[in-house]
Length: 42
Image (cartoon, rainbow, N blue to C red; front, side, top):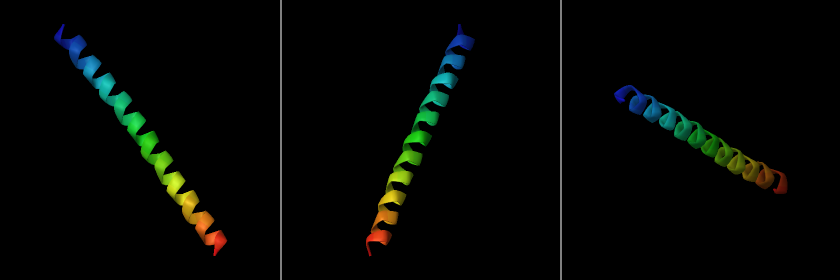
């Protein structure tokens, strides 16, 4: 029983971490594209 709980927590943590990384990566790309657009406009 304890082993199943630990495995579930580890898998949940991994899923949340992977999602957070993708979100941060996406936000970084958005900010970069805004910067590129500003450079082209000037």
